[in-house]
Image (tube, rainbow, N blue to C red):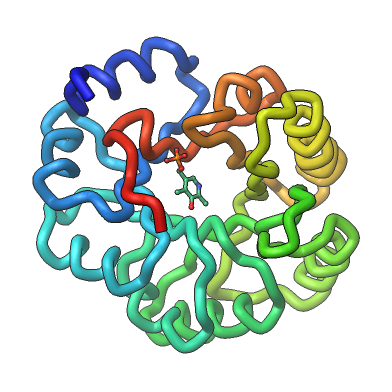
Length: 220
Ligand SMILES: *Cc1c(COP(=O)(O)O)cnc(C)c1O
């Protein structure tokens, strides 16, 4: 890779409009790479593992906003509850209960996005749209004091089929549009390195970009 992290960031930021939030996905990348992005003024980073994110939070500047974007085990919420800035991966009611409980413990209201399953692939987590709606309605009658649902997140199928990705993003965008006023949703988190231009075309206002900034990760 010839381009530097700061050049990649600059390039990306010139492509996106001011109303779009860029989450720099730094999973598996060392502190030094994060600091290179930090020195350009970037403050929002996304991680998918609790232990890795917590270690980075401990070691790096305190004004970094850490976003949890990966599947979250209930018994690990307690480690991120003191500091996490936004949880993108609220994908089940049981997890919401635990985030609420840990939020209360740390006297915080924790911002969350409801993850909605839009991809065909079996292994992707999330509420189906109907389940997400039931959950939102439930919260309206019985609010959780220490959770603030700010919006929704989704991941498209990993495919080269643009029409399929477009269809999946449209499903999420419709859900967002249909429910934003009733439930105060402001954030639509969709789009990664491979599909963010399409996500932006379809109305995303938060993109989660890793490899296009930091370079590719080792395959797992
Ligand atoms: C890894 C990851 C990303 C970023 O992926 P890239 O293809 O490297 O941009 C975005 N969202 C989630 C949920 C991820 O796990």
